[in-house]
Image 1 (cartoon, rainbow, N blue to C red):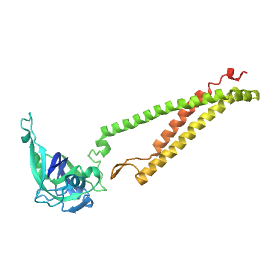
Image 2: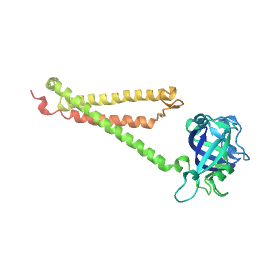
Image 3: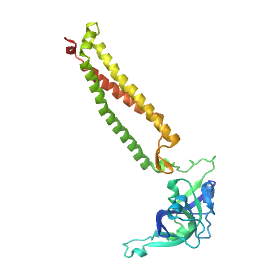
Length: 300
């Protein structure tokens, strides 16, 4: 371990000149900048100090509250629920309140810029009535050459949030199954189209049979026709979908917010899964449609 930092984090209610916002107040010690590379995100002002009640806020919070730096005439009010048990009888006494001077503004991304307010850990500990032994977390910075597995259980972000990622994976599976169900319904149109072609081309089928084509050969013709329709149609659809995803990743055509593009990702596994799903179901549909040709159809 090269360095570590102690952190206290809690949800807080911010108020400035009648404007309100709910964010997370994060109390950190003087080692925080040694553990996390935050200097590159600081826009202007001075980082927090352990001696003064000052804060570094995200650009999103600054924009929402119309709050700048070093405004000593109007201070930022921070309110957090008082710890304890029992029913609240007086709402005005349910919160601890204090004031801060904003000394710095940082910018990372839209979500974090609206979420966090940094100040010194002693200020937050006093505001929350925490004792010296109470922390929310301890963040570590390891030597790149260190072996973190030795006598230590190390978990990645995925492992720490395994339930969330399991839920997301289950959601992906549900979307795939819904897509497959829609595809099966759509393939009924393929089956119906081939059957209509068989009925419409009855005379041609009889002519082919008279010229020596067997029932198996005629079935193969319509089977190949349905297979080619589904496979080549799927390929064209996948190419168009890939182009749309590539255009979104490159040019950010669709935006959720003015600064956040709609997230998309192209993976070969998903591409192949969709292709093989379309191909297999298309082949099955073509087989079912071609099997409707019976010897009776070949009779005059």
